[in-house]
Length: 287
Image (tube, rainbow, N blue to C red; front, side, top):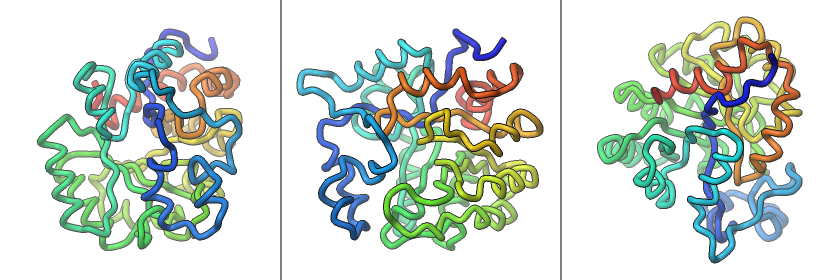
């Protein structure tokens, strides 16, 4: 059977083309110290990617550009960061657009209030958190992050957290995969999804997912031909319900590249629907 056509893919990391990359990433680049990151890159991890999607043309509607790409490659639902464009897209087509909220736990009470306000204002489906990208950095198991996790448990929201070596040139110990072990112990009701590969600790990520029911993984920002072998092996065996598809359009990858390479990923037939759709519907309550 192989790769299933017409499934209705759920993409857990997708966005809209930017008109000005530098403006979009200005906040994140506050933590960068090297000249190349601050002055030359269109986005902070550009050194890792080839053929990064360009900026939106002046006459294009970024929402319609992304909707057209979703139609072209069979993406039925996308999880978008709750930018003004994403909220307008959700207004236009709420069945196609799910919203997540990126937060910085350094502002502890402000973060909790933002999450609660977003939950009340629109159909918030997830909270996202980039430990290495916070200024100052907030480790996965930091007390400030614990307040965020408690709010997510109270509101029944999953949290997506970067795991492994950071793409931008920031220190990465704050994202060491072992830090998730304590979080899962202290928050048994929390659904936590590791984002961006967990390398070079992907074997450890598998061990922890076997151990903790609420810990999941998505290979966002990885072209499919570079999905870690340990993750593919896990998805094909005991982890079929734990690995969820996420892309990286338009930040670093095109949907064309992703969906050209996906059929070559050696997933078993019964895993494909779970990976591309069913796990996301369940974990993020998108049904």
